[in-house]
Length: 137
Image 1 (spheres, rainbow, N blue to C red):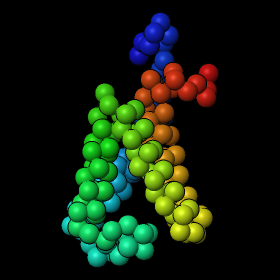
Image 2 (image 1 turned 135 degrees about the vertical axis):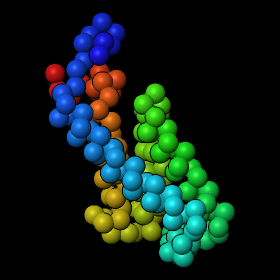
Image 3 (image 1 turned 90 degrees about the vertical axis):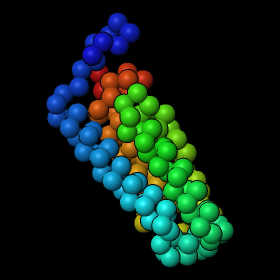
């Protein structure tokens, strides 16, 4: 693929690894959207424990916001915007868990783990991100 005068190629292995990373994240985010849309009792209980209103509107609002960001991430033309928005969404989750003193590796950093998979998958499958963030030359 040509990018601003440079040829950026992605190996088949990197492309498929990126697709798998992105696919796993998207499956998890769709699951998360689904349980917020219903919402399950665990969602409203978690909202209350995290200091947010335990209402249907809050749960569904977060779910719809998550779905919009995820759809933007899945569409190739808007995938970078989707990744940026998902990073912000997950940053809010990390800040919330930090504020209430959640366990570090299981709760606090879970959003960081997802963010790494989001950007790692995008990096491996999208030459625009590779050109923007040239880790490997």
